[in-house]
Image (tube, rainbow, N blue to C red; front, top):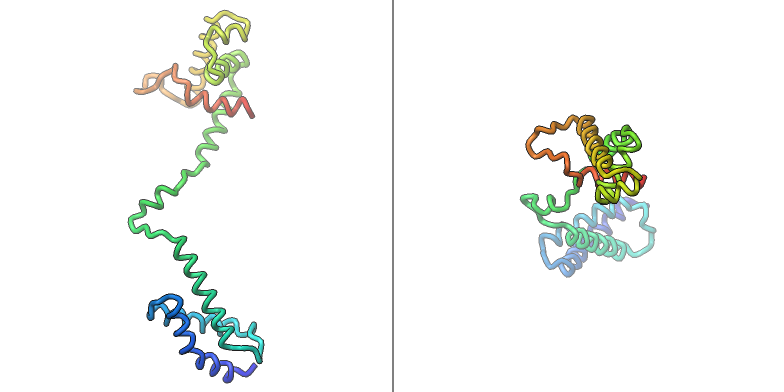
Amino acid sequence: MDFDHTRTAMLAAMPQLRSYAVSLCRDPDRANDLAQETLLRAYANIRTFKPGSNMVGWLFAILRNQYYAAYRKHHREVEDVDGTYAQTLAIEPDQIIQLEWSDMRAAVAELPDGMRRALVLVAVEGLSYDEAARVCNCPPGTVRSRVHRARARLAEIFALDARAPGYDMRASEGLGAAVVVFDAA
């Protein structure tokens, strides 16, 4: 392919490219940029041009494709100067949750069978102490004791201080949710 002839043909098409670009984007500055980007892209991909074919048509196709690609990209972008929109899209990483979950599974697995079963029935399944006692075939006081000791053992394993403000040995929502998944696995 003759480099001088190709370069001359590209430069000769520049006024037509600018006119076409203005008709697409209706902004003379953006049209000039688009025409120049088209020439750069055409030059970078000149090996794909077939000698003897229509140079202007090939350049118009590049310009049109570039315009529509930029148009689609522009409509997907959101102006977010202060980052508030980006914060609404962010999700918390789940590595910590996975590690905590793994620790919880290991801690619950360390509990004796009776304690674990009573804890799962009361904290996860939501059974009353009386209902759990019927399932375990033991007195309700035994179930209460097992659940209390299981929670105390888990608090000890996780180094929770029962005297800390806000700590409630009876609160089982967090543990219940964790044991639900453990029991299902």
